[in-house]
Structures are given as C-alpha cells and as structure tokens.
Image (cartoon, rainbow, N blue to C red; front, side, top):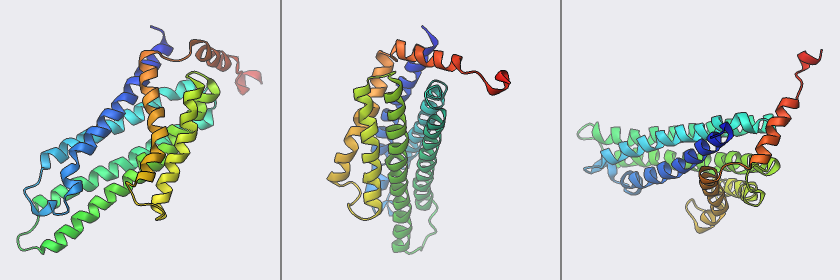
Length: 241
C-alpha cells in the first residue's frame, strides 16, 4: 500500500467516524436537550457522559482529517490548506464549548442545593442547553460549511484527486450550510427548520461521499502523483540564491 493510499484510507475512515460519533452524541444527548425539566428529575447522566465522550472522539476525528490531509493539500494551495486546518480547529472549539455546557447541566442537577427555586434551576439549565445549540450552529453549522465544504471542496476540485463533480457538492453545499447558520443567527428562520435542513443536504452528501470514496477507492493516482511532482519541482528561495 502506497503512502498516498494510506493517507486516503486514514482520512476516509476518520470522515466515517465523524458521522458515527456525531450522530451517536446527538441521540445520547436527547434527554438533557429535549427535557426542559431535566435538572429537576432523575436524569440520565450516564447517557450525557457517554454523549460527551462521543463528541470528544468527534473532535479527534475532525482534527485528524485536517492534519492528515494538510501535507497533501498544501501542494495545491498552502494558504487555503492552512485555512481548512484553522476552520476545523475553530469548529472543534465550538464543539468543546457545547460539551462543557451540557456537562454543566448535569453538575447543576447533581449538586443543586436543597430548597433552591426550581424555576431558577430550570432557567439556568435551559440557558446552558441554549449555549450548546448555538455552538452547534456556529461550529458544525457555520465553520464546517466554510472549512470542509467550501475550502476543502475547492481544493479537491482544483486538484482533481477525487471526483470533481462530487467536489462541487462541497463548493456549493458549504456556503449553503454557512448561509443556513447565518439565517438562524439573524432570525430569518428558526433553528431546526425544514429550510435549514434542506440547505444542509449537499454538505452531508459531500462529506459522506468523501468518507466512502477515500476509504474504498482512494485518491486519483495520477492527480495525486501530479501534486507530488509539483512539490518536488518547487525550488526553495534559499537554494536558488
């Protein structure tokens, strides 16, 4: 197995794991996110802890995708490749803040002082859940659309190391995902609306394609070799002096 194929396989598996961990976390977070009175009830703290663990794995897989791809993509455009890495790290920062917010809800439920006004507890708990929802909107919603959608899609399209037709799903879907986040932020549409869901479909198709394509097929060998040749042909300034 060549180093390029190993890179493709690694990135493909990491992309698939981002889907698995993010979906698992969303399902596990159900009780704390959907129940306004979670802080007053028996709770499902173990589920929340497991959901937090899934999102920690999501952070690792997200960053892994960017770090593993960077050495290859920088041969196409180093500045944009670095931008993709930065966007991924920004997305992961938002995810981490969201994790902390939901863990704080669990702490609030477990350590509530007897006699505390139930209404106040619910208000604080819902505020923390609100933080989690905003971090999802600005991280996996906005930052991911710019990074994995627009930037990575454009790099893949220009290099041709994957299907250019599919790369257009990222080029188009990324901005649509970012626009959907901005629309929610500005109050043009509610979070979780059908319009927002519709605008996220091209980005989902793009990321699912990447995961499956790179895992089972890999990069276009000729295009990847061309990138390597391009890098080798670059003469450092100090060498030419």
